[in-house]
Length: 99
Image (cartoon, one colour):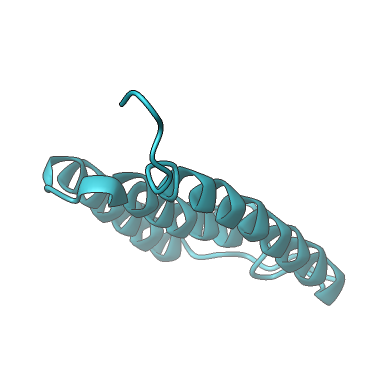
C-alpha cells in the first residue's frame, strides 16, 4: 500500500478555513447569544476538530476501519456532549426556593 501525498495547497486551504473559524469563534463571543454561547462555541470547535482530524491526522486517506472507529468515537462524544448541554440548558427551569 502506497502512501498518499497531500498537496501543500490542501494544507494551506485547511489553514485558511481554520483561521476563518477562529475569527468566527471570537466573533461569536461578542454576540449577544444569551445561553447559546456554549453551544455555538462547541459547534465551531467540533467543525475545527473535524478538519484537523481529517487532514492533519490523515483520516481522510485512511482505511475504512479507521473511518468506522473515528465515526463511532465522534458519535459517542456527541451523545456525551448532548447530555452535558441538556443539563446546562435546563438548569434554570426548576424554581429554587429562596432565589
